[in-house]
Amino acid sequence: MEQELRVFAFNTGWFQCRPGYFIAGETGDYIRGPVPSFLIDHPKGRALFDTGMGVRYRRDRADALPANKFGLEWFEGMEIAARLRAIDVDPASINWIINSHCHIDHCGGNATIPNATVILQSRELAAARNSEEPMLYDSADFDTGHPILAIDGEHDLFGDGSVRIVPTYGHTDGHQSVIVKLPGGDVLLAGDCCYTERNLDLMVLQTAVVDAELGMATMERLANLRRQGTRIIFGHDGRQWSTMRENAPLD
Ligand SMILES: [Zn+2]
Image: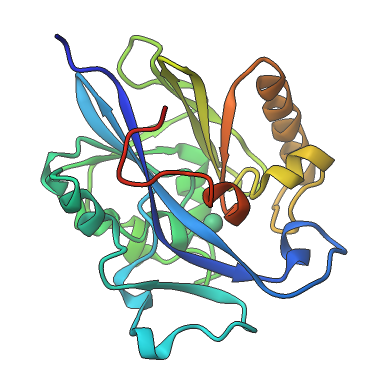
């Protein structure tokens, strides 16, 4: 039997912030969302969608981020290369890295995936290279010497419609997402074009958006897809993540 397309979800760290960072005006204690990375295992090759945070953000358990602070953290063993090895996937066997965008919590693991070609929207690459915000974009993460396939708009990764990269601009200039056709239905891996399900329920943009008009157009597109039955996995949604299984293929 031919091996079928599978997607595995991993949390490679935590993103901690006030609720108001997701939905302007909301208050309450700090909340934690995952920093996801996905393995897309296709009969013709393997791709990652995002790779988490760079090793410089690693923390010792004893030095965990206090519960009342904004920030990112991950612990030894959460990094994508270790997560792949834990399910017997050699990081060297990954053919493609699709980065939703080049922020530090989305491409920090690229350097640990040695043989991949990185796929980015060309406008994201330009934004990253021109950025003067080292807390958001760090060339150590995205200028790793990997071959880069710069695309403009949609891209059908394997030419069979099963893994489609789609532009979802707004959070950054060249943000992109992936729609995977699984036997149980389409799954959209959103990345940061929509942080949480609640943003989409309320049709409210998260506060971190460089272009609100493009961001809203992206939200409309997500809402339409959801109405048509596409399952959306959001960028940093702790509530949704608590319902996900890691280390096992998505249904
Ligand atoms: Zn992010």
